[in-house]
Picture 1 (cartoon, rainbow, N blue to C red):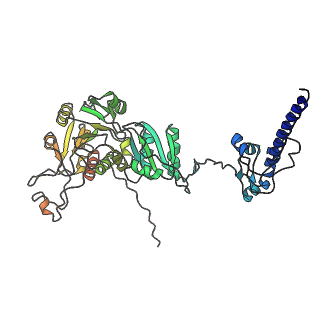
Picture 2 (cartoon, rainbow, N blue to C red):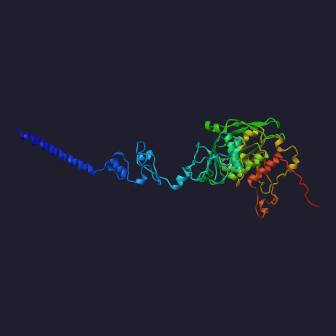
Picture 3 (cartoon, one colour):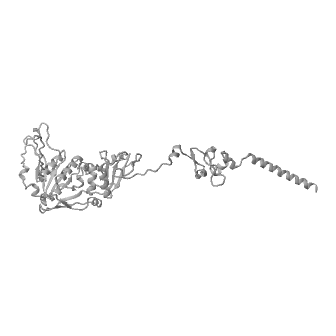
Length: 451
């Protein structure tokens, strides 16, 4: 029993020595992790634990600074630079020799000017659909039309779009338009690149000159009849308004007075009634002529008449923004009630074949024209068929402009070209000029002949 104790001790010692030798051999075969990282080899265990990938050549690696002895192992000359965060995250970024010489790119700051209010951009994604502020919004296009809408302020003004090419300054007209919009507290959008196509959609493919203004519809007051006018000295006349919804009242207002443009000469009001004018171009031209010559209001009658669209506003050169526009639903009732209040209605129509109309020289009017005797309404019919029979039958008199090539006996058959009438916009302008006796300006030209 005594001899077995040393033997057991020797066996235990041998087992311990064998285990120690095996562990030593195993550790000698596997290099230390730090030594492995210093050699630049791929450490699979470190990659699994930390996510750091170290398989770059030694020249592109550096030790983490902060410990003594590690600051000497800095980055060699290369195209890869990494900071402490890059080393911890195991990432790196490539920087060219040009970048190292010039330094990081500087942020470009744009100096705003009137010619370039915003930095021009070539890569701008425009919306796919036209942006509407309200379902009833309209888009007025063209510099003159947008300028008139901003100056008159009869509409609700939502947003102004101005297109600017990348290498083009804003024109003086666009700069003035932008400043006017900002003074009216209207949002201004400087559009670039693909926005030009969207502006084409807003203007329905018509020339917009790079300017589109989103606005509410123009006011059109519903009228039942005109009230009496006391004398030619009056500066306004009153209306009997028709029914309108709350939304319509917000757009049209409820003001039932119309100013009379009689500052130069005292007279009764002159109103133009349009029946069935379907061409937006003609309607815009009539509004322009009526505003320029001094008519006081325009009444739109007939269910088939053209609406006041941006095309009409563009054709009117902005006159529609300040012209008083009225609307009637029952034309006969409107005419009868207004006639009872002292108004006279004149129907513009060509004289019938074989008729013998009475021709009046405007010079014979002197100062006693129709508008000096009573408030007057000139009724103009459609381009093709003229005035409707139920409206024509209510007229106090029929007026017309005789053609120089047409004889009263034969009518249009006396003219080989069969030109029996004028364009409705031209005829309206001539009749307004005759009724209001607009004077013609005369400027004598200086004699520039060399003797």
